[in-house]
Length: 464
Image (cartoon, rainbow, N blue to C red):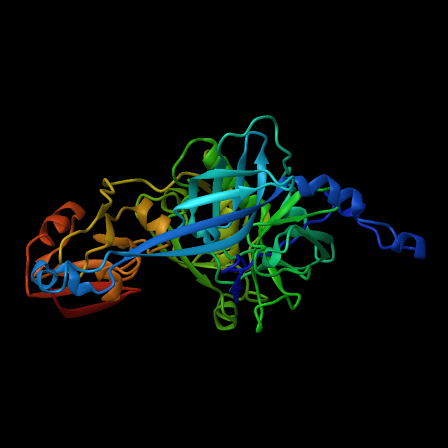
């Protein structure tokens, strides 16, 4: 699986006409010769090129950090700058210059510049990043006048076989339009985000298309291209787009001025229903999401959802597995309730669950660790249901979690990773980010550190 910016890949998966009865098969040679030009003309002005730049500074030799060493070697070499660039695409969604693109296009960017289809260029601020959905929202600086925009299609009405167009900037050659059909829906195991329900298309997608538009024949945005399957790095007709329903949630959070995306939190863990489980529950076929754990005082518990329940639908929309449930639930607006169709001990029933965000039960206290410890360069924070939900971690996780690791830092060099939970340092239990920050300031020759990574406890001894 490959991403689609210039260091990653894009794709434009498309949607179809809003109503199923509007879709028709060409009936004559004349109809086959009909052109997409009117649709293309209406959408291309709203698709942009996104240039992201990340500047890193690195010492020529880490020994130059030691004043004694520098005394004998001429003061040391100046830090070298390494510039990394990526090229992707984006879609203008508001007339004042708000743009949606892929998170992986601008993930570590220190500078972002956007080129419009009319050759104008603007610097842009990153106003929201959502790694979980692989989406980000930019705002252009210094824009005067109304910009062309794309309206959102109802991605829940897309059907396999609908014609779609992909618009982006593959390989940096310039804006390019390709056509295809919707090849499949609700694709999971793509690996691009935590919400696995992608639109698959055979419209040609190549490096540089990431963040570009997948549009239907009404000129509406049905998805944001994000990944392709490829053995060579080029298009082979299997691309994936993030559905417009998910894109709308992220854009709405940005418009509300939030620095993170607020989504409904179910407060339960789920797993797929295997053939054996389906047989034991007297189900005709494996389907739905099996509830394996329910958090105390969460929406699921308050609504009466129980361990062993199988969730079959969300507000009437069937779910085939936990990935599809997660997508359906996460795209619901906050407030109100969702109606879940549930199978419990052979009986079908309805469960109402409140659509509320995960609570912040403790201050995050996000801190970048400094000093000469092995954790230097890691950003840590206190875990709460909200933080665990943001990172996609298990319900019962608590303590201090690594939320980011700077490139070329001590923490990166020692192998620490995002979502590592730090439990013990030098015999002292770690349960607070600020206390951990104070602890790592103490100089030591050896560090005994215990972490939990993906449920496995790891203990190690590292040099200071």
